[in-house]
Image 1 (cartoon, helix red, strand yellow):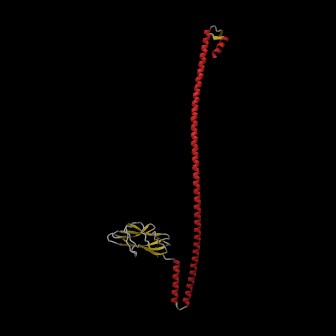
Image 2 (cartoon, rainbow, N blue to C red):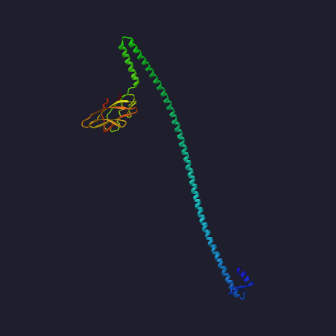
Amino acid sequence: MWLRLVLGYLLAITTLIPESDGETVQTSLKSKADIFRLLLNQETLIRSALEKKVFGLVNDVLVMKEIMINNKKEIVYLKNENQELKAETIRQLRDAKIKMATLKKENQDLQAETSKQLKIAEEESVALRNEIQALKAKFQSQANVTNLLAADVEESKKTHRNLSSAVLSLESFQKNISLLRSLVKGTPVAFTAGMTSYSSTWNGDILVFPHVITNKGEGYSSSSGKFTAPRDGTYVFTVTAVSFGSNHLRLDIVHDDVRKVRTYSSQYASFLTGTNLVVLELDRGDVVWVKRVSGQGYYTEAVPLTTFSGFLL
């Protein structure tokens, strides 16, 4: 179809042929050979142009395919990334919910514990107020007793001046003074504890004397083996220990982790006795106990031989 159109066009027109001087002359197509030669030249030009266009289109198609493939890959990558982000978001939301639930539970527990502690504090406060009231009443009672004693002393003085039995009045006065001193001094502090069964293998740290003979002031603990000073003062402590068989035994009297005196029962004879005594100045709350230094075992009988004692001067 293209050839027919070109042939008809060539038959209907003349050809412009350029001269050597740059001008053109009008020439008619004289022969079929010229026509076909021109047609072949035109066909070659058209084919070359078409091939270039086709080649360009093929390249464009390949480029488009490559772009589409890359786009598909990118879409797949974006889908995967979106799925991962979605999964990560879900996981983070789930973790956040778990953390919120945990924090809520911890907050509830904290509130419950706080309420419990507040209740305990209120109860302790009430008990402390009651104790303070009791102490006030006790102090008032002691003040009343002191006033009564003072009145008795004054009466004794009057009796001493007015009566001939001065000695009897003086004795009454001395008794009243002794009673006043005992009230001011308070409850005596003294203890003695011992062992009623022996051990050949004991090698512990603190020697606990479970058998309590005397415990005025409740300063000695038979469960821990320690004496806690109920008030300030000068105290005397003594320890006596009998070694088991030919074992040696070294014990220290310890005041708040400071070793004060030591007993020693050597291994050169059987069932030797070690004893020592110490005078200590204690503050209220200070602790004294018997600590093993070396050796093992101790001996005693039903009536204690191994003992620990102390008292307030």
